[in-house]
Amino acid sequence: MKYRLFSFLVALLLLSACNGLEAGQAPEISAERIKAHVAYLANDRLEGRGPGTRGEFLTTEYLASEFKMAGLKPIGQRGTYFQPVPLVRVVTSPKSTLQAVKGETTLNIPCEEGFSGTSQTQKELEEFDAEAVFVGHGITAPEFQWDDYQNVDVKGKIVVLFTNEPPSDDPKFFGGKALTYYGRWTYKFEEAARRGAKACFIIHTNETAGYPFSVVRPLEGAQLRREPGQPGLAFAGWLTSEAGEKLLGLAGRTVDGALKEANTKVFKPYSLGINLKGHISTNVEKFVSNNVIGIVEGSDSALKSEAIIFTAHWDHLGIGRAVLGDAIYNGAADNATGCALLLELARAWSVQSPRPKRSAIFLAVTAEEKGLLGSKYYTQNPLIPLGKTALNMNFDMILPLGVPESVVVTGAERTTAWPAVKAAAEKNGLEIEADQRAHLGIFYRSDHFSMAHAGVPAFSVTAGMKIKGKPKDFAIKAYKEFNDKAYHSPQDELKPDWDFSGFVVLARFTLDVAREAADANELPTWNAGDEFRPARDKHGVK
View: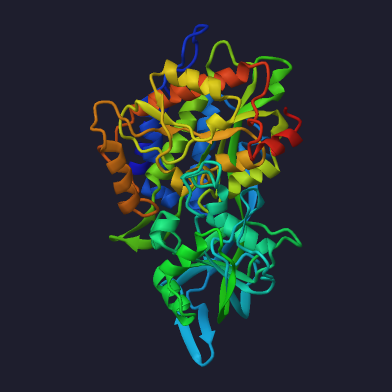
């Protein structure tokens, strides 16, 4: 009964009047509505919003109902707000084994405590016993004259490597201090699979990964259903730094020493003289999750077939290992905040007068935490052709710290929408700030990357580190505390001291950028020479 009363009160708050705007009048943005959305989405009853669970049903039904109340038109399957995403849940048995064998010496590496990960073949059992080859950072980047697989055939072998990429201060060499996609763990597994490796193990360090081993420790994952003939690793996983130390010790090497080797231009891959022997038992379960999608049609009879797209992921980690007595991974900041902003933007966009010329899609995607799967599936099955998709603005893990005086829009400067972004920032009193977490590859870690990779100009919008009325280091300390104590843990819950007033500024900034793109004569594209420009060109956007 208490829960029903709570839901009723939330619905009353969210059902505030939003019709009858005069021409040119800016739609109201409510920090209280955004907070109410977060309160609902991060409630324990939603059980951490795990894909394929009861929590998903409650989450997606809520999002769909809010889209409907906002006046969005459903464009999902059979006239609904849902786009089904076929997934496979893969859960590695904690009884799985991994051994490193050198001559008469056998090193047992315990599951979870020493290694973690999942199989990509979507089979219930994978066994391997193969030579281990150290391939540095596992990168093949001809444009940077870098090849960690130079003159080595790893087909059927086990590759051992580090995440991240060679350190650089030169923006023309692996992006300088900012991480490129070559540094992401997803790329490492993809390249290893392309090379025909049997399995891939990344040696974890806090410095190279940018987060503790606890983030990659879970043995449960999800994947898009595998197509016949698609390359996949028998095991794609991680070793703790301690396990890596012991493994490399069998070869007379150390983690620090191997990393220093991997960072040099003269690095050459080499066999560790060790076999890795694995017995990986996996529970495989097919299921269907859902993206939630709605559209506000544009006013121009010709341009309404094109669209702006706003995205945020609705999923988090569900119910898992208890931490401090709590096992529900609520995901309040990650990413109830992004979804709440998405809902408020949908409500505001739908009441604009006059309506923008192009349409606007609002897309809450599934399985971001499993590897951007929902957004990747959408780019493979778009409901508006990607060549007619003007711009993607994404929202992910925005800490409610107050009114920002700066905004982070990493990647926007690489697009022809950049002048509009700068103008909107100036209009809203925001300084455009470089992403202080760029060295962690943040650009490649959220759903806008799926769009960018498919050619759509895309970037995330989040507050910068300058907060009105707060000390210079306030936001930096807040993000560090969140990363250390709450990120991907049950402690990511709605906090009573969170200040949502800054979401109003971010929403207005976003609307200004999006309106400009929606009314522009030409579709935005990536700048000449950008890594994503060829994909945009293939869609016929020049």
